[in-house]
Image (cartoon, rainbow, N blue to C red; front, side):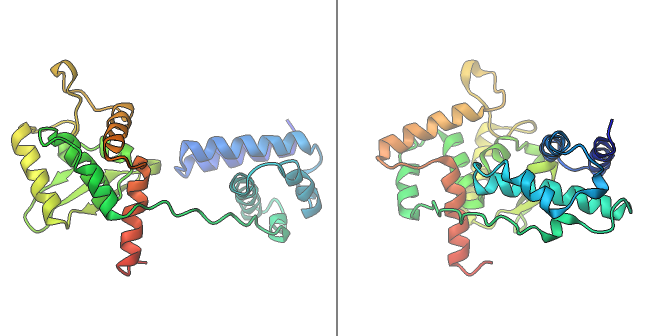
Amino acid sequence: MTNLNSWIENFLTDLKNANRSPHTCRAYATDLRRLAAFYDGSPAAITPSILRDFLETFSDLKPASRARKQAALNSFFTWAYRQDLISANPMGKIDPVRRDLPKVRALKRSDVEKILAKIPTRQLRDRLLFRLLLETGLRVGEALALYIEDLDMIPDDEHIQVKGKGGKRRTILLDDPCLVKFLRTYLKRMEYRHGPLFRAQKNGRGGPLSYQAVQQRWKIYCAQADIQCTLHQLRHTHATELVNDGVS
């Protein structure tokens, strides 16, 4: 094993011990091992010029992908500098990739309401789920992972505990009175005391509702309203409304 491969393995071990997400560890490992395959000299002798040549091999990728590879290199060489393995981080002389500005994909509130109006009154679960996504900006996966135990329905302090990316938990306040009333009605009618908040109804098993099932039902409601909208656009719509209300 070359010195560079040894450094990389030690870096990845420290990354894992620092509780970085498995996705980040896998991505960094892939990019750094490509560097080891590209360069077989002493890692302490790696210069900005060598890194530019290496990064040039990814010139056909989108800006976001190239930026992630720069992030892996920068994190690795920052670690090497802190370990006193190198005197300076060579990535400090590499200009960062400028990412393309994301396209705003928010819908008008009126259009979303037209879609929600197509959900039958008897489909209380669907009405609550999609309303929750709109009013809180939750990711679909986060909403489907909610358990009754994640809810705190103390009057005037209603909130939920959400497990997001990387296993991090955050608190979401339920400050919309209509949503809170809807949630209370749902819990009372379904008589849930514990377990998943949103459950499949097939065969009466009551297991966790799947992402695919939610996508399919949303497509049906959008088609009935004759409006094109993805579930993720509900998150964009929520964010846009916050910005328009003066939230940073």
